[in-house]
Amino acid sequence: MPHSTSKTREVTQLDFKTDLGAGARARIGLLVLESDQTMEWEMREMADLPGVALYHARLANEVKVTPETMVQMELEIPKAAALLPGYLGLKAIGYGCTSGTTVIGEQRVCDLIQSHHPTVPTSNPLTAAKAALKRLGIMRLGLVTPYRPDVTELMQARFEEAGIVIQSVGSFYQEDDRVVGRITPDAILDAALAVGRHHLVDGVFISCTSLRAAGIIGHAEAALGKPVTASNHALAWHLLRLAGIRDEVTALGRLFHAQLSNRET
Image 1 (cartoon, rainbow, N blue to C red):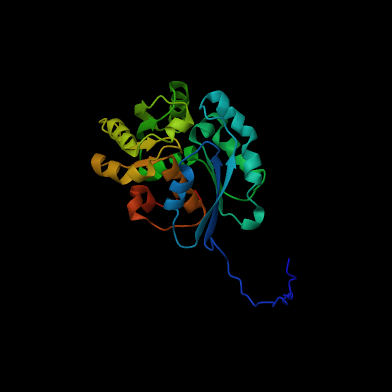
Image 2: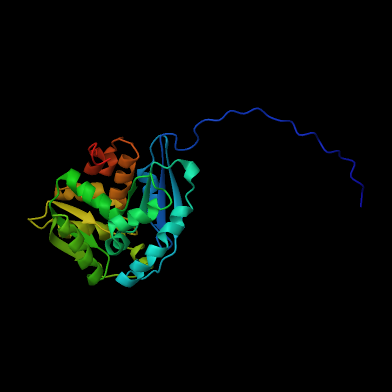
């Protein structure tokens, strides 16, 4: 083998400058379910704003959506929250499971996240939905879910406790998250229209972060003449507002023109 005659070159030290990096206006953390096929890319599209960056951590979960499997996630939330380092300076953190929050409880989810990030505002799809419905003036709700009846009934109860009357509800009766992530946007739009056309309904909420609902919001609002939101849609809006981002986005429907009050932030 020939002998190498090359010499080690001296490494030149290069000058550099630093700036605030990605997310100079706001860095937002997301706790995403292991089984979720939709949340990351939908949230990325809705938060595609100057100076905003998203940082994800995934948490272990069962693909079957039942009250029992939702309770198990209580142990996984703080583990995932710990994977988001404090030095990122996150302005808000969201937990991405509507049914999980329904079973575990909104305040408990907040406490679990804040065990690692005590000063960071938090949200989840249920809390975000309630805030969104309030800003949109929706008190008589049409509800779309993918869940089996017992999970859907628990969600109805949580809205009713907040003074929101469920006037119409429909479900895909599906407990496998792998299947939920493949339900077509057209089917979701048809479901929103079927539920939203009830004469007593003044707005629609589409539940589940795995459902590809963000892209059909504008179509549903145009067809119904009523406001519509969904788990990822409401959560993206709420996290942006909690993080101090007040940008309005026309393509994302009525909600993205709404702001939180100073008391809510």
